[in-house]
Image 1 (cartoon, rainbow, N blue to C red):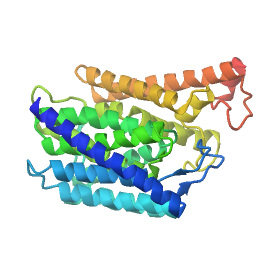
Image 2 (image 1 turned 135 degrees about the horizontal axis):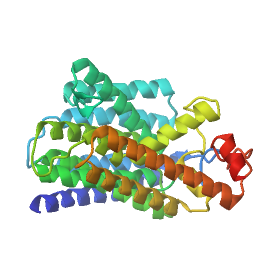
Image 3 (image 1 turned 90 degrees about the horizontal axis):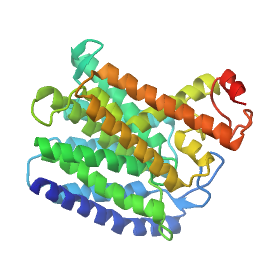
Image 4 (image 1 turned 60 degrees about the vertical axis):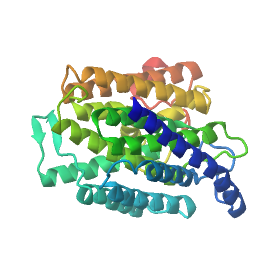
Length: 374
């Protein structure tokens, strides 16, 4: 309990510095005209500063720095080196733009620091496809792949107010509590510091009037990178230890923690490649959060809906890990998410009476399903 109180204080420190920073960043953005310009693929209709990620980074850094002198944390320098790479890549994208290739290179370099210098890699698969331990090369390749997917997934779900930050708060709070309970205070420190920073950002992003701000790529890439680090440590610690709080079937539990970001990315890429027939990296409004807006939800309602559903998958995966293996739990998660997203599309079709040819609101299901419902 004392540890949790300590980490809550760390979260308060991060929250406070982020909250103090945001009005100043908004003021500078207004003077220098650093805005997010509305266009056809964005849901924002007003000009809003995009550098909220800077405030998140400030809160995170000061929370960790001021709260982390009570225990050794050798890998912290490598973790922050990795965060700095994605931070500056995101900030460049927010300010002047960056090519997908350059962004991928930056993410690869960031992950390389974690994999090689901090020596954090996915080396254990908990019996998935009969595989337990991974050698150096397979574990390295898996780490890079998972890292790219996780970081980009948080970048891609940052499409409506409060969504990316609320999912980050949900994941880091639960992980922070777990890390504190199993005796990894340094990682609990990182988790709670990010949770506090994201909470302050959430307040301004969702409820801000004069000082409304977006996190931009600066924030989403930063959040994705740190959650990736926490995920690797979560996977490896459970493989190496036993005890009351040790989790089984960890890869499936991690999928449960990040069901919405991961499933939404997979879903959108599938639609773009196989249904719309274009590049999977072409921006559009076919994310699940965009589809919820079609039902006349506002941003907060859509965010709350997704937050609760992601929480449902987190709880479900933690319960199922006691009884089932990685593959079984993963299939249950994916199947359930697919059913729910299909129900959402059917509700949109019925409620809104959408014509299948409408580019903005059409139902991306097989044509035979569309015809049968119409």
